[in-house]
Amino acid sequence: MKSIKQQKGVALFVTLLVVAIATLLATEMWFNNSLDISRQYNNQASYQANHYAKGMMLWAKDILRQDAEGSDFDSSTEVWNQPIAGIQLDDAVLSGHLSDLDSKFNLNNLLINGVVNEPSRAYFIRILNNLELDIGIADKIIDWLDADQIPRALGAEDVVYLSKRPSYRTAGQAFIHISELRLVDGISEQVFQRLKSFVTVLPIVGSNPTTINVNTASTLLLKSLDARITTRDALMLYNDGNAAHQTLADFYRQPVIVYYNLNNSTDLNVLLSTQSRWFHAQVNITMEQTVFHKYALIFRNPNPVIRQYSDTSY
Image (cartoon, rainbow, N blue to C red; front, side):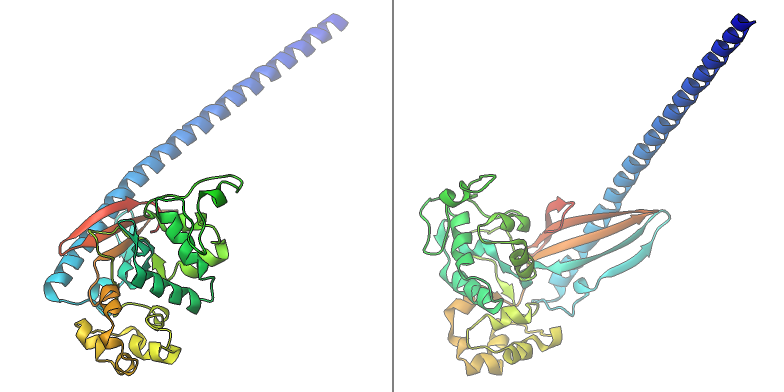
């Protein structure tokens, strides 16, 4: 009798074990199938998002082309500066906007063809002063960009970076992405966040620095045109974001500029413009519960050309 009970017990154990294994295999198969379906959906969604993003980028290029054909200057009141919100498609919602990168100071202007651009350096130091940041950042950025190992008065070359953990070297070339600024000695996350609203990194085309559009520049950048300009002066120049000077001559006739005799400054001619050539395009694609962000760097001279696509902002 005892042997029969033992046999029944073993049989029950084997049966339970078989059921457990079968359940485990079924669960694994279901999980793998779910993963496959999820991967397939994500791949399809990503492909579709890229398709929509490129369509939106083509639209952005067309808007910029039409704008260039209709006007010789750029301002914040123009059509290209109006965001697109909530375009409803069958399987997605699209939104996006264009930003004028020529409304910011281009850090790559500090060193052009291996030579320090003094008007740009002086202007950047005034920006740092107005942000209450260390003016030595200017020299450290120049040392980061240049090819030599001779530190400037307030700069830092490889010897400083090799002592860090982990160690690394200066780039010896122009910035490609704004995030690289975090690598420069003295740029903490707090300093980076304070700076990034006012600076950008753009390629240098030829031997001339990129210019800042006085119509789209912030009050801080306008205040930084000269150490004597006050916040009130800058607000007058900014005109609540509605500045629309057709030429630099128009800008130079502004009472603030005339009062400080800046209309005769050759340095300002190098730094400023009333036109914009570099733009940042951002497209947001919402598909069910997933949001995709796509970015592009657009250069207009005079026809818009997409210089670079990215999944991160410039």
